[in-house]
Image (tube, rainbow, N blue to C red; front, side):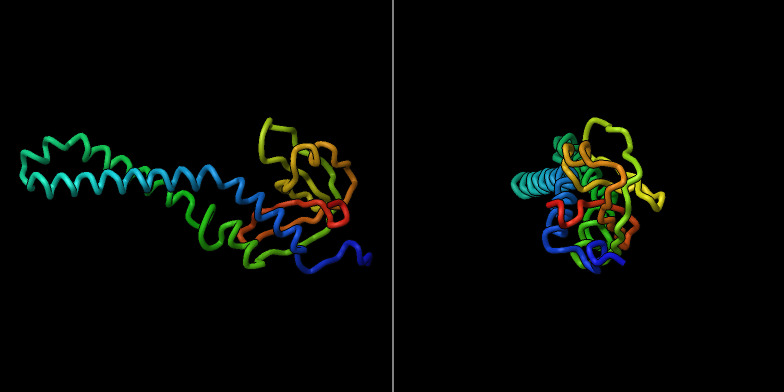
Length: 170
């Protein structure tokens, strides 16, 4: 066995690159979840303020029914976003959590093909084991990566697969 193509864990540099890649991929999701949470809190505070200032009566509820609808919609959107991302994009068993807690296996596999460029993130590579790996590289690295070269292939505990350049290519 070639020692250059064997390692038990990702190096600190490889782990840092993959963590940054995962953070970049989930950035828009996390921002949208935080914004809907803030909007929900704003409407909650506004409705509580109106309730305290004007007193609570049936007439006041009808006057603020539009705000109540906005509040219900914002809470529903936040809840749907939260449950869509829990354990997939954040929290336990997410890609970030698995990588952060070293819940992965490593393989060194030969690149046998690239999936067509979709025009944006993510880019995919097919390896010798027949699996498709999400490429943790920048576009030009992915585009210029030659077929037949070895990649560090990471399979997370949750089943997600990522491919990185070997340490010698950094």
